[in-house]
Length: 130
Length: 138
Image (cartoon, rainbow over all chains, first blue to last red; front, side, top):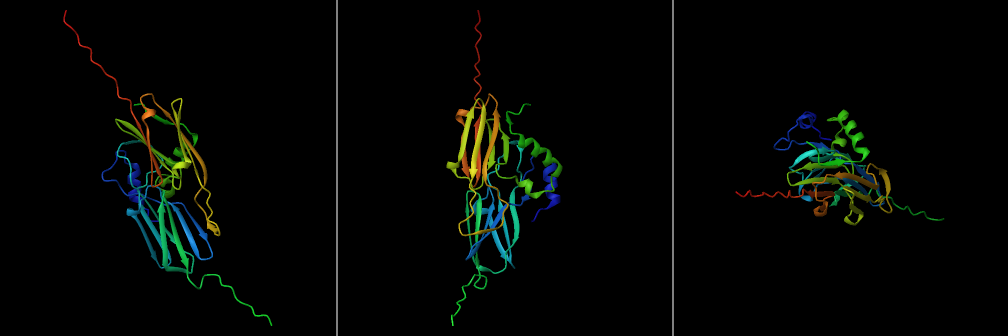
């Protein structure tokens, strides 16, 4: 989680909308599923489009970051979400093939397919009958 | 100045109170949950932005009745077939948010756009019908 507390506190206490918009990161909610061939990571990132989405895999940690687009320039009168970006680091299960990573983004939902490495895949062991 | 759009649902006020206590500390709350709403006031329109990640156009319903605007929708509880859940944070199910509209908003001319999991409603203000009456000299 890359939340800069100093920066976010300033953003929240200032009354007038600052120009340019201060950065304020929020953690997206996410699910992790396991299938026989792959893991599936699904994260809610409303307001993010493909051009501002950044995914990085480094030493078993997947970092996702996406800027929230389309914020309104008018005077805010009621604010429940004020983040300017989604950002989160996820430690992946062991045995993920870093090369076999595939991601989709649609309707503000990010889906990352994490292929299991050959060692991590379940294998049927043949038993010879004597 | 009167806010032209009032949020009706109770959850908001309790959220707000909680929010004030936790400001700057809880990064997740900063982001808002599913169906969290931001309201903006412009000179010509009031703009409502509702987070609706994973919600399809056909699963959204927007109604205006007796000056109350209601947005409801559903998020599918999609456990991908053949997969086991290891960790779940995303919530599924139905949501409803309601807003009282002031008389100066023209709900009939409202526009809705769903993009990247965000629903944006634009509620234009009625154009004030001002007419100057010429005074004729006797």
